Length: 264
Image (cartoon, rainbow, N blue to C red; front, top):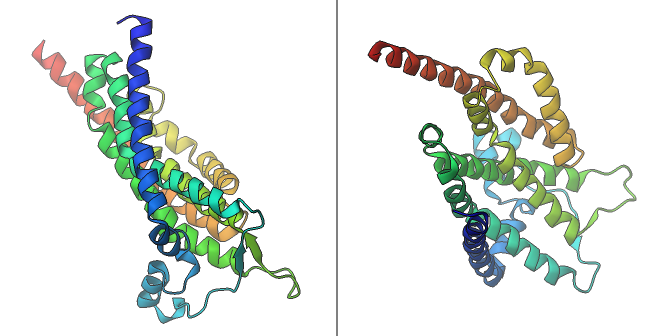
């Protein structure tokens, strides 16, 4: 294919991806009550799934009443703008597996046969990790962040009245950040396949990686220690899992080389 043919092919992949996002965004826009009352504002209510689950685990974690704060719109177009923005974000989250699949369909033919073989199942695992990260961000990190930041006061005379833009931006940032950062094992897998990363290298720089993870958590999340720790902890676990993945990749390559030599 010529360069222009590649551009034409990429254009159609992008169009189909945008259409899928648009379809889910329209569905979310039309489902305003469900999306806002149940999903977006869910973490602000005591009967939210996370709070009920924590309460079942231990009475010490029961939350009868969340910190009192008010969410308001200070701009005439604030609620309408946030309605559109939230619909687009939800459309992006729901359409992510299909969108990634479309982009992967464009990239995959340009890989060598061996590269295609080792990247088999990429769409499934990327989508699985992204979905896991999004669910973790929404059901674990977001409620704790809302509970902590919503009730934090430097003085009793200062009321917590948050703009709707600030609230939606915070929730969206937490959810998307978790979804993206949970891709760490996939990144390590391909870097190991490319020969850029080894288990020994990952172990050597483990402490440095933990510091980077804490810094990334501080940048991508609200500036409260609880939220940062809640994001950093699973990422450290994923880093450890990535070391095992890197070991597995090298062992698989060594076995493959041994079989090739034996056949020769």
